[in-house]
Image (cartoon, rainbow, N blue to C red; front, side, top):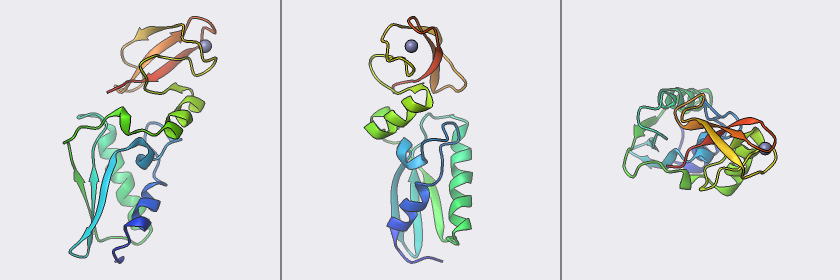
Length: 150
Ligand SMILES: [Zn+2]
Protein backbone atom coordinates (compact mmCIF):
# COMPACT_ATOMS: atom_id res chain seq x y z
CA UNK A 1 0.00 0.00 0.00
CA UNK A 2 1.37 3.37 -1.03
CA UNK A 3 0.10 6.85 -0.38
CA UNK A 4 -1.12 9.03 -3.20
CA UNK A 5 2.26 10.06 -4.58
CA UNK A 6 1.72 9.76 -8.32
CA UNK A 7 5.25 11.09 -9.03
CA UNK A 8 6.65 7.91 -7.54
CA UNK A 9 4.46 5.89 -9.91
CA UNK A 10 5.65 7.90 -12.93
CA UNK A 11 9.23 7.34 -11.78
CA UNK A 12 8.71 3.58 -11.58
CA UNK A 13 6.87 3.43 -14.90
CA UNK A 14 9.76 5.25 -16.50
CA UNK A 15 11.95 2.24 -15.64
CA UNK A 16 9.68 -0.18 -17.52
CA UNK A 17 11.14 -0.70 -21.00
CA UNK A 18 9.05 -0.95 -24.13
CA UNK A 19 8.82 -4.70 -24.83
CA UNK A 20 9.83 -4.19 -28.45
CA UNK A 21 12.32 -1.34 -28.16
CA UNK A 22 14.16 -1.81 -24.85
CA UNK A 23 16.04 1.52 -25.07
CA UNK A 24 12.87 3.50 -24.46
CA UNK A 25 10.47 3.28 -21.55
CA UNK A 26 6.71 2.92 -21.74
CA UNK A 27 6.49 6.52 -20.52
CA UNK A 28 8.78 7.76 -23.31
CA UNK A 29 6.76 5.83 -25.84
CA UNK A 30 3.75 7.83 -24.68
CA UNK A 31 1.46 4.92 -23.85
CA UNK A 32 0.95 5.99 -20.22
CA UNK A 33 -1.73 8.64 -20.50
CA UNK A 34 -2.40 9.45 -16.89
CA UNK A 35 -1.87 8.35 -13.30
CA UNK A 36 -4.55 9.27 -10.79
CA UNK A 37 -5.02 8.50 -7.13
CA UNK A 38 -8.60 7.93 -6.09
CA UNK A 39 -10.21 5.81 -3.35
CA UNK A 40 -6.79 4.79 -2.02
CA UNK A 41 -5.85 3.30 -5.34
CA UNK A 42 -3.72 4.36 -8.31
CA UNK A 43 -5.50 4.38 -11.62
CA UNK A 44 -3.08 4.07 -14.52
CA UNK A 45 -4.49 4.86 -17.94
CA UNK A 46 -2.76 3.17 -20.83
CA UNK A 47 -3.32 3.81 -24.52
CA UNK A 48 -1.87 0.99 -26.64
CA UNK A 49 0.21 2.02 -29.63
CA UNK A 50 -1.86 -0.05 -32.05
CA UNK A 51 -5.12 -1.71 -31.30
CA UNK A 52 -4.41 -5.39 -31.43
CA UNK A 53 -0.70 -4.80 -30.93
CA UNK A 54 0.52 -7.99 -29.24
CA UNK A 55 2.78 -5.87 -27.01
CA UNK A 56 -0.22 -4.44 -25.16
CA UNK A 57 -0.53 -7.48 -22.93
CA UNK A 58 3.23 -7.46 -22.28
CA UNK A 59 3.07 -3.78 -21.30
CA UNK A 60 0.45 -4.49 -18.70
CA UNK A 61 2.28 -7.49 -17.27
CA UNK A 62 5.57 -5.58 -17.12
CA UNK A 63 3.94 -2.59 -15.44
CA UNK A 64 2.16 -4.79 -12.90
CA UNK A 65 5.35 -6.68 -12.01
CA UNK A 66 7.36 -3.48 -11.68
CA UNK A 67 4.85 -1.92 -9.29
CA UNK A 68 4.47 -5.11 -7.25
CA UNK A 69 8.26 -5.45 -6.95
CA UNK A 70 8.18 -1.99 -5.41
CA UNK A 71 5.47 -3.06 -2.99
CA UNK A 72 2.74 -1.11 -4.70
CA UNK A 73 -0.34 -3.29 -4.91
CA UNK A 74 -3.17 -0.76 -4.75
CA UNK A 75 -3.36 0.02 -8.43
CA UNK A 76 -5.54 -0.63 -11.43
CA UNK A 77 -4.53 -0.56 -15.08
CA UNK A 78 -7.11 0.71 -17.47
CA UNK A 79 -6.91 0.70 -21.24
CA UNK A 80 -8.06 3.92 -22.87
CA UNK A 81 -8.54 3.87 -26.65
CA UNK A 82 -9.75 7.41 -27.09
CA UNK A 83 -7.96 9.55 -28.20
CA UNK A 84 -5.89 6.98 -30.09
CA UNK A 85 -2.14 6.85 -29.58
CA UNK A 86 -0.11 8.87 -32.01
CA UNK A 87 3.59 9.08 -32.74
CA UNK A 88 3.27 12.81 -31.91
CA UNK A 89 3.30 11.77 -28.25
CA UNK A 90 6.93 10.76 -28.62
CA UNK A 91 9.32 13.45 -27.53
CA UNK A 92 12.31 14.54 -29.63
CA UNK A 93 14.70 12.94 -27.15
CA UNK A 94 12.80 9.66 -27.50
CA UNK A 95 13.06 9.86 -31.29
CA UNK A 96 16.79 10.47 -30.91
CA UNK A 97 17.09 7.33 -28.76
CA UNK A 98 15.29 5.35 -31.46
CA UNK A 99 17.66 6.67 -34.10
CA UNK A 100 20.72 5.71 -32.03
CA UNK A 101 19.19 2.25 -31.58
CA UNK A 102 19.05 1.96 -35.39
CA UNK A 103 15.34 2.55 -35.92
CA UNK A 104 14.31 5.50 -38.06
CA UNK A 105 11.95 7.57 -35.86
CA UNK A 106 8.47 8.49 -37.06
CA UNK A 107 8.70 11.41 -39.46
CA UNK A 108 7.36 12.56 -42.82
CA UNK A 109 10.71 11.78 -44.39
CA UNK A 110 12.36 8.41 -43.76
CA UNK A 111 15.98 9.11 -42.90
CA UNK A 112 18.61 6.37 -42.67
CA UNK A 113 19.62 6.03 -38.97
CA UNK A 114 23.12 4.94 -40.03
CA UNK A 115 24.21 7.71 -42.39
CA UNK A 116 21.34 10.25 -42.29
CA UNK A 117 20.65 9.81 -45.99
CA UNK A 118 17.15 10.62 -47.20
CA UNK A 119 17.74 8.35 -50.14
CA UNK A 120 15.87 5.32 -48.83
CA UNK A 121 13.45 2.81 -50.25
CA UNK A 122 10.72 0.67 -48.77
CA UNK A 123 11.41 -3.06 -48.75
CA UNK A 124 8.43 -4.27 -46.78
CA UNK A 125 5.40 -2.65 -45.19
CA UNK A 126 5.96 -4.78 -42.09
CA UNK A 127 9.18 -5.21 -40.16
CA UNK A 128 9.70 -7.37 -37.07
CA UNK A 129 6.46 -5.91 -35.69
CA UNK A 130 3.38 -4.37 -37.26
CA UNK A 131 4.28 -0.88 -36.06
CA UNK A 132 7.49 -0.80 -38.05
CA UNK A 133 8.26 -1.17 -41.73
CA UNK A 134 11.47 -2.28 -43.35
CA UNK A 135 13.55 0.14 -45.41
CA UNK A 136 16.86 0.05 -47.17
CA UNK A 137 19.28 2.93 -47.52
CA UNK A 138 20.29 3.54 -51.14
CA UNK A 139 23.53 5.23 -50.08
CA UNK A 140 25.00 2.96 -47.37
CA UNK A 141 22.92 -0.08 -48.41
CA UNK A 142 22.00 -0.83 -44.79
CA UNK A 143 18.51 -2.17 -44.17
CA UNK A 144 16.75 -0.57 -41.22
CA UNK A 145 13.37 -0.36 -39.53
CA UNK A 146 11.16 2.69 -39.65
CA UNK A 147 8.72 3.40 -36.86
CA UNK A 148 5.52 4.15 -38.75
CA UNK A 149 3.76 7.45 -38.31
CA UNK A 150 0.25 7.24 -37.00
ZN1 LIG B 1 22.41 4.98 -44.92
